[in-house]
Length: 442
Image (cartoon, rainbow, N blue to C red; front, side, top):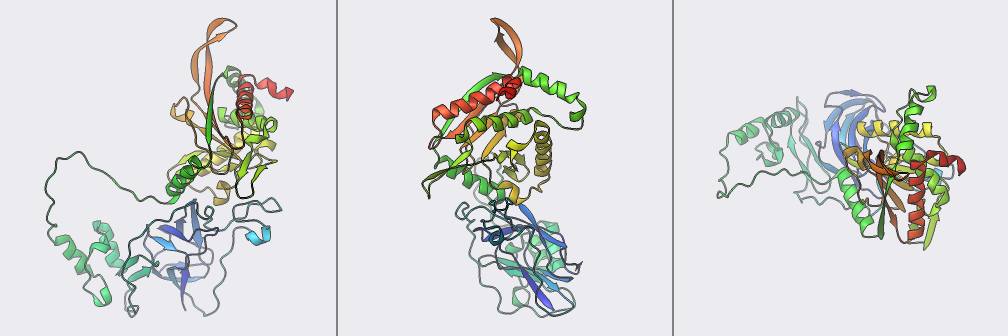
């Protein structure tokens, strides 16, 4: 039985996703839950499992094409007729949780779907060029695989058999630029070869060269990041304060702990101490662990700190979260940071880990930068930028000395955080990093 697997509903307002890579090819045998392909939403890359067992008949969409929810992406030939098996959900449905996708339910778990995306309206859809409607009939089956064709509502994938498609790919030819000669608009091998042999189009008048350029479509994580920071910058009135601190005592403590048996197998970075200081400071100034709810005309204060850590990845900037960070010890925070960073760099951060943050830390110091003016993560009241840690001249007890110094920059939403609260929070973080022993007195 010929079955078409359509792009699943990615949830919470997103209506499309992009095919990144196919893990199967026509003729491959697949089993239930075998990964068919990787797709990218505006939030993250996720994998789609097969709902059926059978043989891959056709790949209906090429990598790099954005597909609307409900559009067929692959044909699987199954041995028996019957109702399609439901694809397994990675987590209970939002209705069971009593929460929206990406938000915590009554049981504290984050509701997720395969292909989870941001809230409605947070991402502007990529405009796509119009195209002719799909052919009235599918080409009749032949001895070799049928031409691959698909429409996603706006974009038509050229008709071509897999061997021809592979030839075009090897030659670097975009099939959309090839004139078809086959029946029903099918592109043949001869069409591709003729396209290669054809003389180039008349050149444009020569102009003085100022160097080349490279263009990439705005999509995926980059597209979502742009929408998020633009919305945040023009919605929340940002205030940024700066503080330069002597963290020599914290670095000495780190060296002592590294020699301790309990920390020998832990990657203890300065960021772990910053994370701990932020969590402690938030208990004294809860205004920084809150959000402004415009629709309800309310300020929402959170009991727990869902700590976001800005991470640069090959797909762009993402902000995975350390859940309930304020309940973790220094060692537990260090382990969580290592895990978070490793998963982010591998590109496998689950979509649920990107939602529901309450405060963010961005470590610009790893790039040798002293400080910056960070933009708030949407829905959060504060973000702390940590600058480079380096030796500098410092006055200690009236005398000049070389100390280990770092700059902090705190941006906060002035709608709910006044200068007093923001200053106190930043001063508390600085005090704890200057003298970590203060934590015992709080």
